Structures are given as structure tokens and as C-alpha cells.
Image (tube, rainbow, N blue to C red; front, side, top):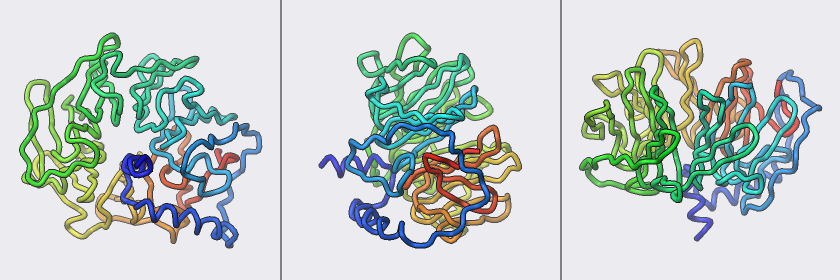
Length: 364
């Protein structure tokens, strides 16, 4: 039962049997000839502790950072943080890889989101609550401190410096001193099927106008303008009521990834459903990212990674060297390095090729 429960938390549609078969097959595939890697320097100066090995899931590739990267973030100092599915969080500071787990004082094994406040504290939405890192030590907040639920899926800091925390049992607000529960009125939907919980808030977004968008687990999206709620469900044109992730682009469009319906884009008036229209494939979508040039990236489970240039989509997958069909995070750092995280670990994209990142890099 623990294996089944953990598989649900992976945010993936890949069955447990397929994962087990992949582990076996990957052992034999490692001996096969691989495509030449791009001309990127390997960083031999990187020092790393051993990957924690106290979990049921084996590593898929020798040297990989972990078997599953869920989120990626770069803090104001330039340190890169990689949230994992079972090993807490990994930090790369330009020289050293560090694993922060429960042994280090870190609260949860699974990290769903990473943000930073104006003081330089880094915050983590984890499977065991909300965690703050001040550069020296971790402070963990849980239901004992007033959090509505310990399983945290999303966290943002709004323009008024209020934390909004999405959990499996609703939303908590945090002003830096006290947690308060923020109730969201339920909207009536037909044939509700939740992935984790009927009360789960899977993702939170603040748009450029200060509106808060709450993605739910089976009840669509609730937009809050500070006074009233607006509902967006399949009845309004949304492609699916199970929300995985959202992003606002530079034009003010809201991109919506779902668990069963693919991708919707909302321009303030109407929804465009790219999956339902047949322009892309894949039903489970995460990892939205907008490049400086305006290209929109996202990943579709069991399909690949898409890039949208404003008029057409380009898909990248195994044929381009992307050795996974389960990307969940796409991130471009301050140095212009393009990172992808998901099932099978961490990957890079140099503009032409995709390649895995092991403990020894390439980091530069």
C-alpha cells in the first residue's frame, strides 16, 4: 500500500509496473552506445556526498543526482536548488553538491515548490509542511504551528508579502507570524474525480493585476480578486477540472496544465484548448516556462517537451536525446543555462541537444 500511495504522489500517470520494468530495462540499456554529448565542459571540481539510498526506488542512471527532480530554483546568491521526490532538496553552489534530508533538519522527503523571500530566505513546499532555510539552518512549519495541513503542494508570496500555501486540505495564509485558514467556496462540477483530495489546492498563481488563481484537484480554477471569486471549469471552456500547474506569460495570458485534458490558454475572455484541438498530444502537463524571447515551454507526460513560438509547436523527446518521458520542471537560470527535471533525474538543453546531468556535471 505504501508503494501505491507514493506512486500517486509522483504526479505521474506511469503505472508502477512500467516503472519496475523500466528499472530492469535501463540496466541493460546502459551498456548500449549513446549519442555523443555536446561539447560542454565536465566539472571535475564538484564535491558530492553519496546519494541517499534509503528508498524503494533505485537510481535509473549511474551518477544521476536522484531518480526524480520535481522543481528547480536559483536563489539570489546564484545557488541552484533541486527539489526531489524522495531525497529532500539538493543544492549546487558552484562547487559542491549538498543533499538536505531529514537528517539535516529538513522537514519532508518530497519537495513540490521552491521560492525565496525578500530577505533571502529560501522556502520549500514539502510533503511534511513548509520549510524555511535562512542560510544556516532549517525551520519547519506544520499543523502544530497552525498550517491547515502538512502536505504542501504550492506556495507563493504575493505583492503584499503574504504567503499563500496550498495543501491537501485547502489554503493557509501566513503573514510571517501567524497562520490562518483561508476557505474557498466549493463550486459544483459534474463527475468530480480528485487525484489526492477534494480539498487539495494543487497550484497558486498571482497575476500582474494582483488576482490570485487557485488550481484545485477536480473543481477547476477559482480566481480571487480580493473580494469575490470567479469560477473556471469545463463548463466555462477549461479543458479539465484537475489542475496541475499555471503560468502567466508576458502578454497576460494564463497557461493551464491539467491532469487529464492537456493544455489550455486563457486570454481573459476565452479558452484555447491546444490538446483538444489536436495541435499537441499528452494529457498530463507541467513545467511551464517562458523564455526571454517569448517562447513558451511545457512538458506533456509520456509525450515529450513542447516549445511554442507564438504560432506553432515543436516537440522534443527521445529522438532529440531527452532520455525521459516524465519532465516536470523547466528552468532557465541567470547564466542562461537551461535545465529540465523529472523522472530519471536532471537534464540540460544547449539549444540543440538534450543531455543528462550527473554528479560531475556538466554544470557550466
